[in-house]
Image (cartoon, rainbow, N blue to C red; front, side, top):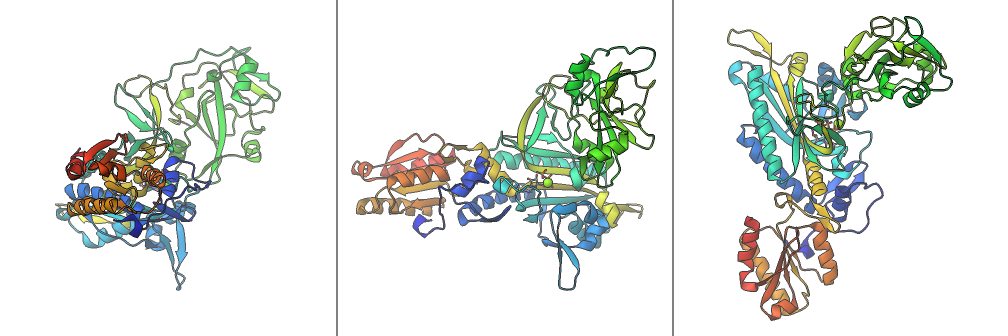
Length: 572
Ligand code: ATP
Ligand code: MG
């Protein structure tokens, strides 16, 4: 492709909302153009990259027997009512009405549509398993669309769904898909890791996320080098935490109330009473869309994992109660809540971290007062013990006990064992060998196409621009003529261009009449892996210059050897 004929416009302007490097570079390299918040046009140059990734995805999924189909973006509300998600999905679901006033949504995911199709077509265990996928546009009305393609509202996703007659069959396909995903991200030359993950609103029993490691990643993950344990912190568990010393004894047999005027935060309480924050039980009051208040207790030095809590309560939107609600729940202002003497209709959920505390400190459910010397069993008991700990760096690995390491990642893929959540709700049944009807067992497998390309740029760039992993580069070779006004330069560049094309090498030919400085700057920015430069000086000695974007080390090569050298570099 000749640049002078091509639709490629680089820019120096970086919009203010482009916080991360991949977003900035995609805009500067002219790959995407913003139409509205979280909605982008992919230019011909940008689209090539997404197309290349899609081809890798297709190749690997076809290999494990998945079949490509294409489903509608617009989905009828009835299907979502059947699965129960019309209510549950909340504001991320873009809802529409047609001219007959019938309700629809723009699909954020396709479990309902695929389950509806399969329940109509498939009757017998003999027709199972089935694995179907598409690469298609999704819309999610994200609260905070940002980071360009990384968290768009409209975005391209590969989504696959499998249907089975047994858990074993699901396990087999899940493993095949897991391995296919590994091959996809390896083919893209990405540094990634697979972690245990939370299943979120999609539902189901177990899931794994594929994380591209990057400082700018929105997800935090923990890993143990010893056991290989790796989990998103949303899901991560820890081994037993070291026990704190028993706290101070109150006067008498029971807990003792002490005056703590205006002392509300755990740290203030600990300092005021001369104890450690881990000897304090922190009690927080939460509310959700169900408008029911719950009290949650955790060790004073630790935080609650709100994803675990929301899952446990089976709610979507969890928020800390406001002052008035806290007063109503505990009879005290914010900062003095505690597990002792709460009204019996308030649920008290306690994290395991407070289970072993001996003589702990907590709020007294009275203004300006705390209790010391409190004991579980004797003074109070939670209604339930649950793992709600937000696990972090240094916590013991649940498998080996060794300290966990924390890092950040970009979630590029997510695979789930759904079980019968959708098939049960939507009556997607098969007849087994004995002729009995059973709900099909399902798996689903997502991969963000745009997000993966963005993640590749997060991992591959320097101060001057993108450094593409070759498999995702929009073109393999950038051919530059430094002064095309000179006839011999233009002729030689044209000739090499022709030869590259003849060999089906994807070449972008910068034949523009721009200054060499501009061309080199653009070349660094758009990051094509192999660069061939034809200039007057070199040509006088019969030479061209070849370099890799990766290290920019220049090789002077006889013009007759350019093709061989390029082929050699591309084969690496
Ligand atoms: P996140 O937690 O980042 O919102 P998710 O768990 O909602 O992701 P899934 O429903 O599992 O995502 O979707 C499958 C894949 O689609 C994700 O792994 C990700 O690569 C991609 N994806 C999800 N949301 C977006 C988005 N807003 N923009 C771009 N890609 C997305
Ligand atoms: Mg999401």
